Picture (spheres, one colour):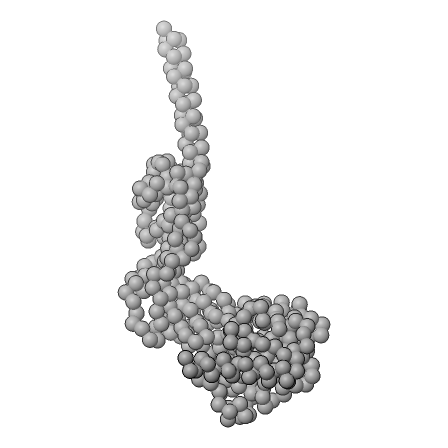
Length: 383
């Protein structure tokens, strides 16, 4: 009798162990399988939250099928206590294992609200935008000019949220004074900075965090520009009339200020290269403007004849060759254009009314182009 009981008990134990093993295998398979989410979502994890709250939110949004299995999987992988606060993009079909990894690995938030401080050539703006998880594109919430408009409530609201991300976007062609002035007025940064050397900052988009020092942001911009200048200098054409990376940077800054048309940069560079080769003065208005403003603010008007004749270190109507410093912070494309100009016979160019320029080889051709431009200016003035 006891043998029968022991035999039955052993059989039940084997069956129970078999079933338990099946349950574990099923659980592991479900935990690692593609999830039910059909469209990406942005998951916000508040500071002080836990896996129980996160799993409930995920269940409610249809991202996981079983909250308990999600929590067990997180416990089993020793990640329950590694939950990070932030806003995280959960892609469509993400498994529970993948979602646990997303919310515990740390780093910057990958979705949600972003504030972009834009440093432009003529104005500064602050933009609040939200990432649309379905399209992966940002949607603008509000944009304002802090120097001219009151601070919107939406900006105040997102500044108070812990998972808001911040970015500083520096446009090509801004001066170092404009960057310094903008950084000094961004309240989430700390410390003080003096004006960096002109041309030493790479125009780009830089992610920052609350409490970052202004000095550290400038250092990142300088390091990025050093890399760009070195790469452009290394790849320069053999016959380019430049003697150093600094001269390359100076010429690139002039190209940057002369044209906003990407396709023209190498043509504009060719004009200046041809003039340098022939010992001609560059005679470019942006250098005259820099001589007037020295990069502080925007001139906001046309040049006067007296300013075109005034001798300053940057007035290329008066001085020979390149000015002593850059006149702005050029981007990668202008650096590459300065290093590798097009091969053209052009030594003149003037605006053509379309946003681009008309190029010429002879003074007679150039005078005709200038006359056309003056006519366009007169017609616009009478409209």
